[in-house]
Each structure stands twice: as structure tokens, then as C-alpha cells.
Length: 120
Image 1 (cartoon, rainbow, N blue to C red):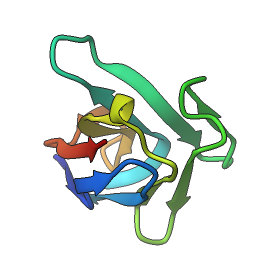
Image 2: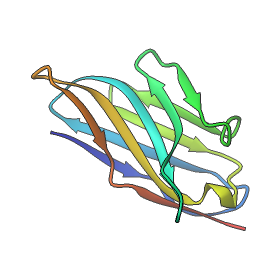
Image 3: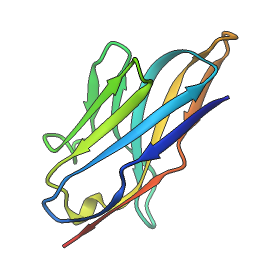
Image 4: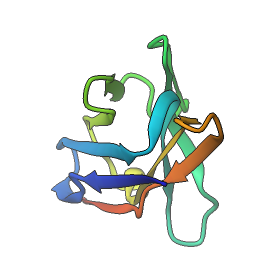
């Protein structure tokens, strides 16, 4: 009942930048937290950054100072600005959004994933 559409992934050279976007749509009453996760080949999915409705973000230690998460509540969209990318950032990136539907039920939806590849 909540759909997420991600965009912005691609191939970039080390030291470069990318900006990911994730737009939520559907029977949304409210959005609590919006987050980005990533999963590299052979590794577990890990939290990259999360931002709550009040705007307070938190980051994985590996991306602090390089990545910035932000959200536009008028568009139900979350962004991830990624700077100074390195090969360790290569992964499929997923957005995760949770909140409440207009029915009052809670939801927790995931995007389809977008590939980020950093070449050295």
C-alpha cells in the first residue's frame, strides 16, 4: 500500500559524488523515519543513515562526514547525498520508510534497490 521508487544510482569514480532519491506514495497518513541501507556482495545489509520526522539524522561511522541524509516532507521523499565515494561504498542501496497508513495501520516499506558502483 506504500510504494517506494528509488533513483540516482550509477557508476562513479573514486572521490566522486552521487545523490540518491526515494519517493514514497500510496495510502500514507504519516511518515516516521526514512532510512538508507546498503548491501555489498557477500555481506549483510547495513544501515547507512536514518532521519526521523523531527529531522534528526544518524549515520554509520563509515559514512560520517561524507554522506548527508535529508527529507522533503512535502514530497514524501528522502535523499542521500554521497561525497568522497570510495570502493567500499559499492553496494545496492535500499530505502526504508515507516509510518502509518490512513487506516491507522503501521507500515514499513522497502524500495527495490539501486546499484552504486565506485571505480578506483
